[in-house]
Image 1: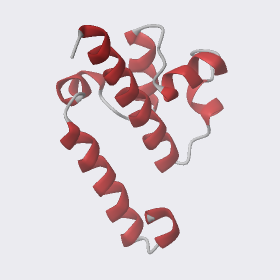
Image 2: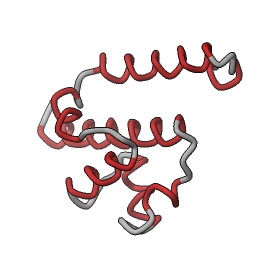
Image 3: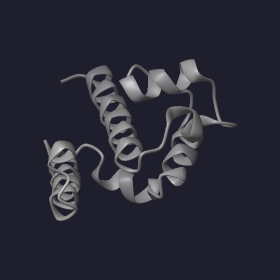
Length: 102
């Protein structure tokens, strides 16, 4: 795997995480990126197609109550995403929201 593939994988993971957390917290895209970037830039971030700089990612994650420096340590770890997904499903089950859990 070359460096470009690694970078692209991390971009996809960051975008997936941001999208997943935003949806779990029921935050609209415009609420999250308002005052930080344009809709086009935000859509590229969530789709994993690129981002402008780490500061923007850090600010977006901060609005989702995620500490960026801790995320860096686990970003490429598949277990992190599985753990977050499992926690989201468990929360839905606790709330008896079977539609969301699916």
